[in-house]
Length: 287
Length: 280
Image (cartoon, rainbow over all chains, first blue to last red; front, side, top):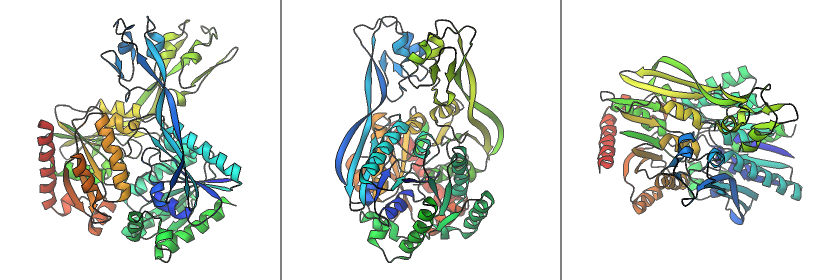
């Protein structure tokens, strides 16, 4: 079984659109959306929710107002300024429970913290596992792990050989959690000064975790000079540019129609370019 | 007044708006802050001269094996599995540590002290006359909020502060926007833009922060974001049209407000609208 992850560093380069297209180009796989913060992939795949699960990411302390003697020890100690007026400020609380351990009168209770939900949906392209982290919640990395675990289980049960994952932007904990153990990371970039800057950083992360990477330059024709700089950089780093996609308004048109580009505009130039990208990527990952 | 520029969806134009806003207000008493420490980009547009750099550190436990009785209390109180106590050894996993201080406070032998570990850098400088600060997390570091917290200590509250926030709605963004006066949400008029705008608005409500919207790339997609904004009673303060010209300027790290000075007026009006909203 192979796992392909699509990441970018910089947001808005086209990860979800490309993942949605890949979903339409191959069978016998599980599709995953690991952008648990702001998940969008289901909007392209005609998804119908079949399962909904609660996700408890950690613990949260609750101060029992009757037992509390207002000594202030918890408030004074808390490193995250998560206690105010002897109440826990949930969006600041990291769930360390130092307050619970330090309270001299045992006035703090520990509860499971509902951090979000994860879902399994049916799509015409196969099962989709996705999630929604609660707003202002922590533990996005843990929710990513839970989603990936569910995807692997579905793949095993059905004898699927591939998991295709839409990753989050950035390089922090949800990205790192998405990356571990994948067979190939496809990094989608754009030919802009921000794109090339962020590409360099995300490739440092894939190297740090020893994950094979390929690059796709999306919206290639915005700036041919910067596109060329990216090509040269990748060549120097020994990283293959697996695809070059032109900017095309069809991708937004398809999105507005609630479809991926392959399903909506299969004869478009962009659909053809993505098909070629998929050929290179699947050849590499199955090698 | 501290204004954060956030979005929900990545790539909607937060940095574009932040950079052009700062460029339009450069004669005023402002400070530019880039809190997207994972992928900082604001400096690419404002080209600050960096005059000061320092490491940003977090505290992690160090065990004095002479004093340690291997009782296991530290591991028991650690909520993040950052400590494992064996028969005659204690393993620390600093990359899992959240620096909460529980282990060192609760060790019955006083065998734990906290030492500094670098997670990135904080840099200060000036772009023209405007003071500029940003943070850069070391690639491979998972926990981002501590660097943002550290960076925010450099905010000068005697000035009007413009913060370029990271994308999303989880802990790095919450850390960034938490004590701000106003959140300017940049969206795009597409289904993805709207989907994530809803989450971002929910985040602002949860944090009890007033918000306003900028629609970037107006003209692609549809007008659903405007309908949504009206339903929620959130003002749409600016629409930036989709333009291949603007895209090309952005690609080269150039500012709309330099190329088209009439846009300075539009961004200045945006600022005035924000100030009015905050004062109400």
